[in-house]
Amino acid sequence: MNNMIYSYFMFFMFLIMFMLSIFLYLLDKGMIFEWLIYNFNSLNVEMFILIDWISSLFISVVLLISSMIMLYSMIYMEMDLYKDRFVKLVILFILSMILMIISPNLISILFGWDGLGLVSYCLVIYYQNYSSYNSGMVTVLCNRIGDIGLLMSIGLVISNGSWNMFLLEKNKLIIFMILIAAITKSAQIPFSVWLPMAMAAPTPVSALVHSSTLVTAGVYLMIRFNKFIMDCFIDYMLFYISIFTMLMSGIMANFENDLKKIIALSTLSQLGLMMMILSLGFKMLAFYHLLTHAIFKSLLFMCAGCMIHLMNNNQDIRLCGNLNEFIPFIMMSFYIASMALMGFPFLSGFYSKDMIMEMVYIKKINFIMLVFMLLSLIMTVSYSLRLMYYLYWKW
Image (cartoon, rainbow, N blue to C red; front, top):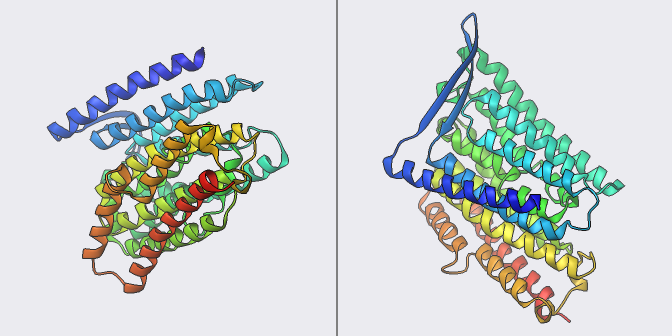
């Protein structure tokens, strides 16, 4: 019953935040609430809350997905002994994410960032066995590297007299540290190993963590710091990292047999796409793809959770087949989400991906990198069709 109350409350908050985001977008205004905690010499320790159309729209998407997941986990986790603990952890996770989204201040970003890391560790080791413990430890250690980057950037920013990110100078070292934080949280090369391993968590968590919240935190941070990245040398570095992440995850997903890991690797591929277009300077395109991807990816994960339940907790796609006979509506939803992931015309993924490709074509970029990008987009279609074949046609 608690889940129903949380779900309805989150859905109500989603409607409010969505209306607020449209209102702020039409007015072209934002609000900053500032609270001076204490003043030490010339250093102001302040708490900021930034409400503009970007942050309120992102919060609304997070709340929409969270409300649906609360409803979904009411049935999915009903036989679990500790489902109250699960619900409390998920709510903590959502609160950490909201704190990170509304903060233009590096210290309050760190609070939300560390909250995400800690709660995601607790959720990955939720099913208590050695496999989950190993996955949780890899997750938390990879994310610690990013936290070190964020802590070092906080230390370097002290010389400015404030941690407000709008007052940052064009300091390459600070921006480089923030970039390290973003690529560890968004699982870009060479920190990609933790994302498939985090699939040891329950499926509702995978849907929440790996579609709309944890892994997109790095992309959101880069969107906020975009003007500093474009002024430094770092945009080239981010471009190459993201292209190779897209290619690597596409190749891996084509040879993977674990249902949840295939979807996790497709998330990695889309994160690479967001980072790539972000490094070219189109931050609104990256944000648009982030929102559309969050919705269809959480749908994919939820459908995968239903399939895993139906297949007696088996995740190997080679042992599935002809599932449309048993769960036609779930399979139809899964195919629509897969087609959106491929960029099938007139679905949500098509509009963002098509615009991203168009903007890449008009930029003067390396021809080999362009070929790599097209290859990775073809790989996306390839592993989606492979997944459809194994779940639908294969007997």
